Length: 155
Image 1 (spheres, helix red, strand yellow):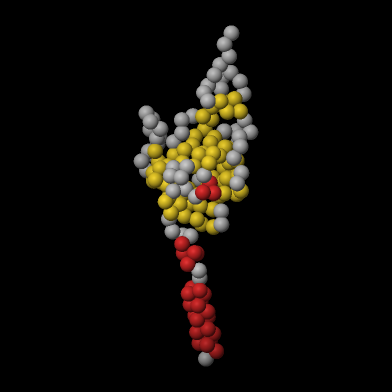
Image 2 (cartoon, rainbow, N blue to C red):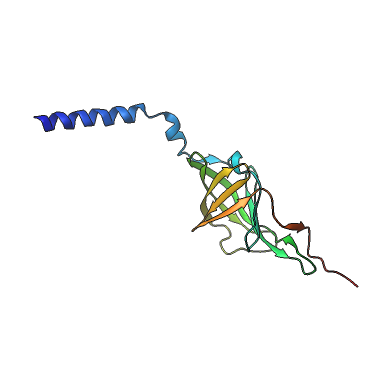
């Protein structure tokens, strides 16, 4: 008798909890078009492999930097990324992004035209973590000098 009473009470409490869960919790798991405002802008990976990510309202662009032949400066490789981006918010600052991978004009990346999904965490306004099999830390300011193209010293 006590076991039946306890089971009934537990079931009622669980049911009420589900009914009282705010609609925003369900809305957070829905896919939204575009990129979240919290991650839009330019991001730089300052590690040994210098890289960049740029998020606009509808797509992402990214690649590595190459070191200039002449001095200690870096220039961007042509970027590739995702178009038709959608996202869902997994927690307060963690987002899952999905989109179709595209190539720069005249090139073809390995997964061109395929759907890709990954996570990002907007740690702060100046720091972003990119998750794809591990995480990479990106900041809003590079710690290295960027030039527009490879340049060499001439005599």
